[in-house]
Structure formats: structure tokens, C-alpha cells
Image (cartoon, rainbow, N blue to C red; front, side, top):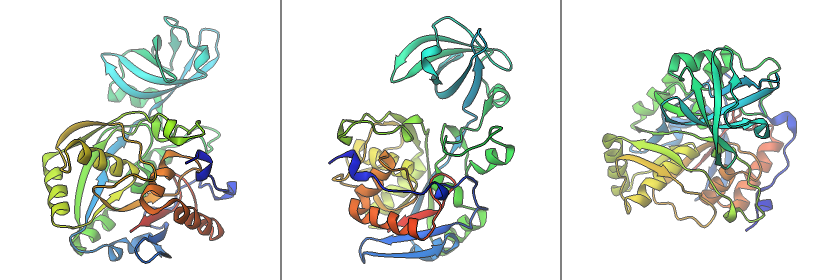
Amino acid sequence: MRTADFDYELPKGLIAQHARPRGTSRLLVLNRREDTLSERPFTALPSLLAPGDVVLLNEVRVIPARVQAHRPSGGEVELLLVRPLGGADWEVMARPAKRLRAGVALALTHGAATPRERLGGGTWRVAFEPALDPARLAAVGRTPLPPYIRREHGPSAADAARYQTVYAAAGRAVAAPTAGLHFTPELLAALVERGVEIARLLLHVGPGTFRPVQTEDPRAHRLEVEDYEIASGAATTLDGALKAGRRVVCVGTTSCRALEHALGAGNGRVRPGCGRADLFILPGFSFRGTGALLTNFHLPRSTLLMLVAALAGRERVLAAYAIAVRSGFRFYSFGDAMLVT
């Protein structure tokens, strides 16, 4: 297996720069059993699922995780918040990281951020003054749009609203669980009316979701740990569905990764509580719970594309991507969706 095996050509014009109104995206349906591809509007999703299916959502909230700072010399540094470390300290990624110095404070629009120590993997422990409570974070941070979404003057208020699912409830994500961006409250209600159950978990999406694979053999790539939480009610719903042979439809790779890790940790049962997903899903992986996957179109050579290929087969997925390109589907975070059944 080589990282290059997950490459494909994508015209830049198909990288979505703005999201369509929720619920109006195109949906490419890959049926593994029948080995077919078809296109449907996203609003057709309830008709593509069966009564008794369980749709699994990641209800994490995206935080304004990009913080602009300035060195004493005036040079700009962008800080990406990764996770809180207690008190006023956060683990952060910095760009350019080589310009940080331990103990040398960076100026923020309000307050300061002082690098304390390197943590490895390109991250630092940084102390914020004042501490980043939600109100303070909202004042100094910006929506962490991916770098391929261009905004000359930074993300707008509309971006902040659109880069958040309608069911986001808690937690801290530095990237949106993008498959969920297509849903409207009306579509969720239509799923319930169809007889589909809704289950929710919380996975705190970290920067590992978008770090490129830089090794020739993807199995040598290190995927960062992400924290997740599954409430007892959700665990009961998921276990009951799997025991009865009903299908779990994961909305996004984050829901899939959390579910599969929980099943592995629980020896085939979904263990409620907190976990730390260190699972890198590659072709050859044996899925325990994921019966179908709703996802967006992912970057070449990415860990997310590898996960989709693990479920549906590399050649089949790349063939579907080629058809999506020819058909003008929109790619990446603000793009269209794909359902693997």
C-alpha cells in the first residue's frame, strides 16, 4: 500500500469556496452490494434509508480556533487552538512555528499569549492572559476555515454560521464534521418520520483530521488522538441496533472513527463514557458497526479518503470520484456529499 495509491486529479474550480443553502447539495450514492452509482438531491436521503436504521451524528461545536497574534517585532503569527491543557494553557499549532520563543509573549487584539514549551508534533503549550473562556475566545478567535477556502479579509459572520451543523451542541472542534453541514431541522424531522433513529456522540475534532500524509507508506503515518464521549443512552441505542442487525449510518468520518474505536475498546459493545480515538482506518480494516457512511469528497492522499476506501474499496471509490469530477460535483468542506451504502 502506498500513499500515492490514493491520489486523484481535481480541477481547482471544483473546490467549493462557498456552501450552498443547507439541504440543496447533490448526493452521489455508491451502493456496494449492487456496485452502482447514482445521483440524488440531498433531500432524498430519508428515502434512501430504511425504517430501523440509526443515523449517528457528531454533535460537536466548531470553536473560533484561529487566533491572530504578533511577535514583539510586529511579525504576525497564527495560532490554531488544539485542546485545553488546564488553567489558561492550551496546546496550539503555530504558523510560522519557528518564530516562537519560549517565554516571549505574543500580543493579541486583547491580551497576550506566551509560549511555554514545545510539545512535539509541531505544537506548543501556550498560556493565554486573560484565560480563554467562551466570551474571550469569541472576541479573539476566528472561524477555522480550511486553507483551501479563500477569504481575503478572513471568515465572515456568514461563514461562522454555515461552518457549524444545525445540531452542534457542545465540545471543541477545530474543523467541522462537514457531512453534517448539509442537514436542516426539517430533514432531521423527515428521518424520524421515516422511522430512522437518531443517535449522537461527541468527538472533539482536532488538526489530525486535515494533516497531510507525508510518508510513502500510509501505515507509517501517525494520526493524532481525538477525544470522544458517548452517553449511555446513545450507547444503548447503538448496541441494540447492532444486536438486532439494524444498520448504523455514520454521518461523517468522525462519527465512524469514534464508533469503531468504542466497539474495539468494548470488545464488540459500545462502551459509554469518554475515550481517546487513536484509530487510523485503512483498507483492510474490519468494520464492526458502520453499515453506511455519509461523507463529503475528501482531499487526495488524505486519511479521510483512506477511511472511505477502507469501507467501499479503493478502486471503487476512486472511480466514483472520477465520475464526480466529470459531473461537476463540488469538493471538500463546503462541497457536495456522498453516501456509501
